[in-house]
Length: 253
Length: 243
Image (tube, rainbow over the protein chains, first blue to last red):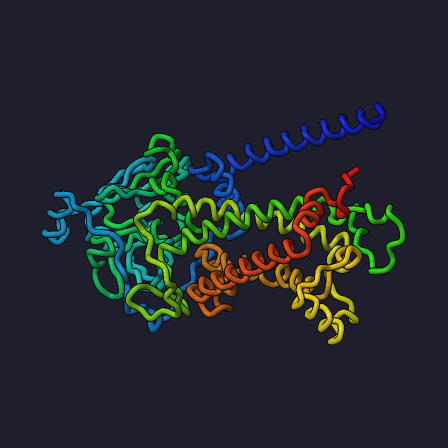
């Protein structure tokens, strides 16, 4: 190895490395600034999750609508996964026809509120005929009737600092979505399905319906919604219990 | 760069040419990264599939609706393989796609495909194809000179894998994404629905695994040591070390 060549090589390699590292640093800062890093970004698998989430949020429209279908395409079979919550409170609500059920909406909002089922039904109702696709591989098409989450968010007044909407079920399930999906017109608090009240197995009285993500984001048996600017203090900080088991927080996939 | 390695049979005159790398550095590096990510994709794909080893046609499908094929595997829901499988699947998909993109772009840029993979008109003639098939049927080992360039069956197979099967498995994978199909609905409607895309994704994966098995069998038949040496060091002839 001749020394001038190796020195030149050393300088070039050094400069390239420095450029690469600072480029990566700038990319990380920008990604954080524009909300392109998902809560489950940690670890080796977090690299893939971050690439997927950032690529979709950069390259794709935040307003694109999930595919909608004709009434004739509604599936005759709509399988149910899991059982209704076995808590005493839920059983009492179920027995009482959800007359005393309330949905709490709090966090970074101007007017923390609680809503009865009748309160939610007083918002202008909307419906969508969309897929419900389970990560296991099966799927069905149903009509979902409810109030867009955006209507409720507008009612309570969301702070400009808000970054996530977190929603909790009566059982151990909870999940969260970012603001683009929270404001999305097909993100519903669904209280009806195929022209009837939401069946117990499908999450009565109200479930979240996130049309652009896989089924597990559409948490059933809602009890509380909270708006936050960070997932750090909620659960293990990964935005949902799903990532700890290997399921992406961002399930637009 | 080393793309100049594939010379028409008969033009090799001296040992200096024989020393030229068999595969370029980029081809070798992307080949092995691809190998690892493909194996990870297959294993994690199996873990995901076993949650629901039934295939459907159309938009929807579930237990209680008619299936296209019931694969002879149990429904594996309790075993905790699917979750880690999913994370691994999507990470290795990124590695596989980005490496593949680098390989395809560099192959177009350096004319690797045009020079080494696109068969000549003469190679596509019946007599030439018959000869190659006959060599395969009789398990005839390629001569040193023959092994320096791809025969017509290899060329067509590699082209089909790179430009047909991989694009198809990527698109059918994306066609199962409700977010991506909200922007590009055509990528799922063209296959007849989300469950059709899942079914095609499965069969293309099977085709790629069959390709891998035949590929390994051929490497063994053609001389495992030499072929591995060529894809690791870039050099063909035994005893020659990379300079």
